[in-house]
Length: 247
Image (cartoon, rainbow, N blue to C red; front, side, top):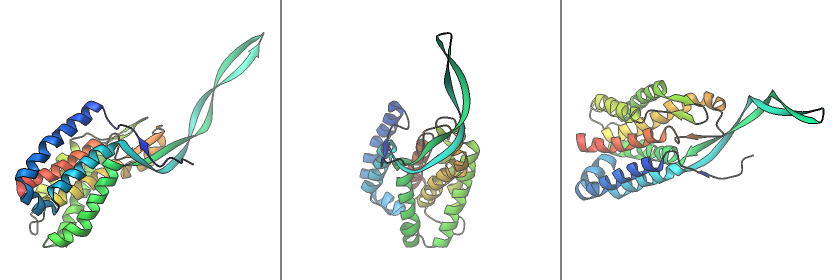
């Protein structure tokens, strides 16, 4: 039984982390000064909270919470010592053994997006959208399109996990949202994009590939972490930027 409550490691390089951090630091003051009313109207959240959640998501990418252990049968190579004429010979042999993969939930790439999406679905849409049922349908449609696109483009990387091209989730999210947010009445494009895009990326990359996890050969697999975090994170930023374009 794995007893540690969390694992801390980098899902990507320090340089890439700094690029994301610097970009966020540049964008946030501009949003606080000039876009406060627009962000509140589009997201139903004050800009300070939006910025705080994006920062928590970025730094939370280092933290992974263990949620399950998967065991699988795998070939193990060992050596058998054979003494002969005073010399110990090491003879290789292969036998089947049990391999354990620890499944974790990445705080920044899975837990925070799930919490924000739950807020959008349970509070923001019912209280802020004139036609909540229509908005839920649009979220579901964007989720399905993004999940399908991400699943088709994701790759299973031995020893790492599920890898997704970083630009696919945000690009598909924006395109799908632009196509549906006016159908049957205008809904908030930002709420549709964030909930549909981030949940779609998680479903397409991780949940639809969950059957492959025991075969990855990785000691730790992070849902929303290495391989998928950047796509989910940029999807969140892209959904916020939709406020500037469409609100």
